[in-house]
Image (cartoon, rainbow, N blue to C red; front, side, top):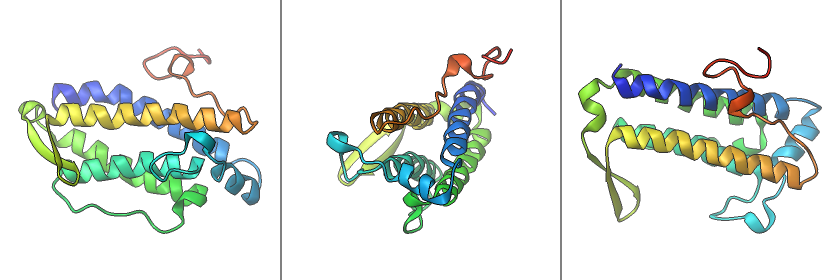
Length: 177
């Protein structure tokens, strides 16, 4: 693994921590309560067809999956129908994408991180970036959207979890040490 791959390990660990905290929170209570939490609406914050908390989480996971598929030159796969309303299926889909990201990060040699490549994210709008920047984008994109999930849950009247880097064990220390 190149130097960039080692640097990503902390961001991957932090986003894994966030996912675990949210998965545990959505997994509490009965099935109806979990489904209700996923269907919490975005209200005025709705954009690009993302209308619910579950759809926003799915967006996080689909973006990671598709971006890794772009990096590895594989065809884009789509999530199963209805996955945004099923806690286990949703987070299992995310876990598959995460395993693919980790495999990709572990496979790139030091020289490969800084070779610009062209990717088509939106039809007719190619972007030319280095894989190092693309992987950084994947992880920062996720962190930004988990903050939005937290806001949506709080605005719906629930505290939700508070997965914060400062209080996690990632990079040492945390609330439990």
